[in-house]
Image 1: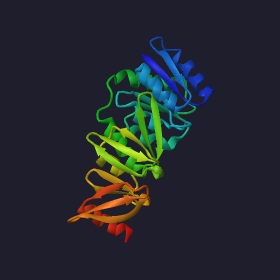
Image 2: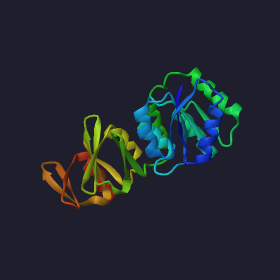
Image 3: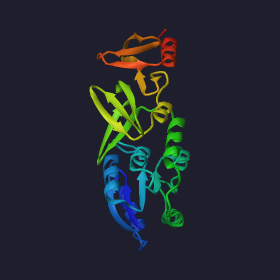
Image 4: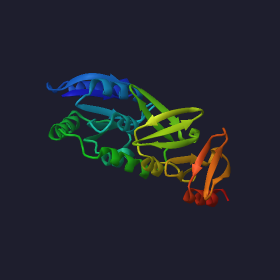
Length: 242
């Protein structure tokens, strides 16, 4: 079993190394001290199992799991009990609460050996867990080995591109592998509005609404860009902007 340890505390990683050393079939192929390193290492090494801390610099454990993808089998390791429900919502194999014993680690490994296949529909479970924990404060975009973190407040607008969305912020644009309808449910509805079947706009970026033809309108953003607004989108904007 090829294993990666992800924890920002060196002592915590050392404890896991020691406990895992009692299992001859476990090969620790990587260690990471933050979420960015974890996403890159998981992509490169494709481990069988990841021991993943939750509260870490740069990216937390749930964000790492979102970016790493559905094939990542995970045992969460944390000092914070309040994350347990969310951990199982995303179908983690187990949840180790620090400090834990050798026996408790052995039990978690036994669970991992008994469940060799990744849980089904983990992407949908991650999205549902995210909705239950409030609107997104930042959007994570994986670009090969790189990870871009975009604050939701910095987003100007989002455009559908088939199975992707193009997120525009500060004059730059990034593609994220997600449907527009899914992202819409995760954003703050008081700040972001679906104005068209292909567009979501940050209300703070709208300069004015202009007619664009018979029964159609356009939202003119502060940078001059024009976003098409459907009839239903116009009704939403009128209700929100007054």
